[in-house]
Amino acid sequence: MNTLTTAPVAPLLDHLFAEAERASSPAMKNMSGEERERLLRSKTEYLDFYGRIKDLWLPVSRETGKLLYMLARASNAKSIVEFGTSFGLSTIHLAAALRDNGGGRLITSEFETGKIARARHHLEEAGLADLVEIRAGDALETLANNLPETIDLLLLDGAKALYADIFDLVEARLRPGALILADDADMCPEYMQRILAASGRYLSIPFAEDIELSMKLG
Figure 1 (cartoon, helix red, strand yellow):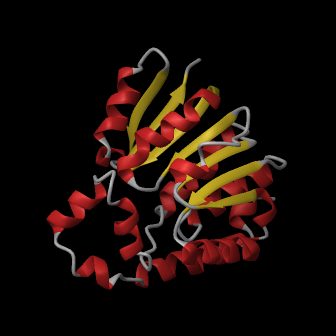
Figure 2: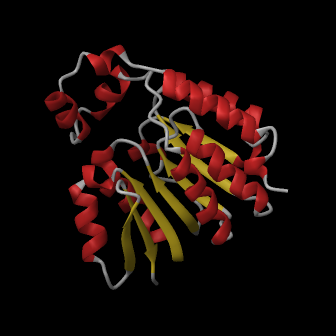
């Protein structure tokens, strides 16, 4: 059995992706492209920015969700860290992989309380809540302590400007062969410089136009 393609997960994902496609954010519509770009790259205004667009889904694509599931399954991941829960679509894909790997633990972080409530509800509907710990608050604080000794997979999909900082918090615990997937990585040049400069320790390739996929070599 494949948890991702059977009930209750498969029909729930269809419903959630359809809801995400219909959703809109008045705050985002009223924001100029220049302001949005500036806020996305800001390390000081990210809480305000994401608070203003708290009704926006910001989900991974269906293809990226499947990729996350495949990577977690192929690597037999047991310990996953996710930066940016949002409404939980990526979380469901990763937790489904843990279920099919025989169990494990997914730690994810989200500061917007409304999104946390919805994500928890979605995980309950999916029958995957027992595998997931959602840490509420700024990830610079929630992911700074009490992480697993070894981490198999890291997903960076929160405030883009913080990718390098979150990577710093987690890097020492990444096992050899661990995978790092950074969504919209080009929005954080600092992270890209770090990961590409460490070519002796990480193998990294761009994937599907907006993803940087990396593997720790040792």
